[in-house]
Image (cartoon, rainbow, N blue to C red; front, side, top):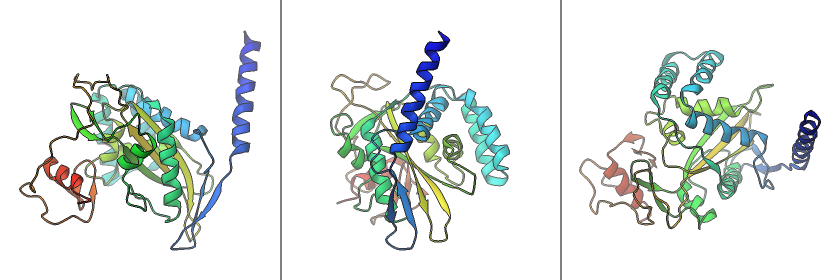
Length: 297
């Protein structure tokens, strides 16, 4: 039995080593400065770091209370104080009462979506949920997964949202720091200074079925290296699939106000961000839905 396990382990090591050797990083120059990104543009499947990120996402979803010690260690390692510490302690309390969620399945088409966005962001040296040609995560997921992730699906409690959710993170990589999926995942869960806790809500949102992750390196003009992470989430749709509250999935969007809701900006905002931010301020769901659906009109 031991010999058999040793053979399996050795073969697995060979496969993993071959993957590392086959990795080809492409240098992508920033358009507006002397920085550049290094992206594995030919990758067709997650590497060890990206698989670790998917593992971390599922670990906190399926065992939120069991994830608390990792957050506590993160607080110690990062020496958190002030507002970031408040956010971290808030997260710990939330994980203590969080109902375990379903494990997410890796989606190859979402991996491809994330990789394409990494290449796109590599040209700018910035991070943005919209691609340089103006496509949001939902649009990008829909293009790469047209048969499995239609534009509208019910997510958690029957609330309809667009198919693609995306978390973006950047981790300054000092000498010897190394890529660390757990550290970055906890960074997103803590969500310091993000009043909506949008990244945390995405990771802990009920109703998703699939996810993917992609990481690349971005070098600023001053030589600082950032590990840029992209997490993608979505709910697969089939003709017979239903949401958690037994409401049939549908490709039809939720009702959208035909007139601008009271208290909502009357002119097109400068920015809109999930779940309920317009120009950086929290607004009603009706207000957010109105501008989300009228953005290109």
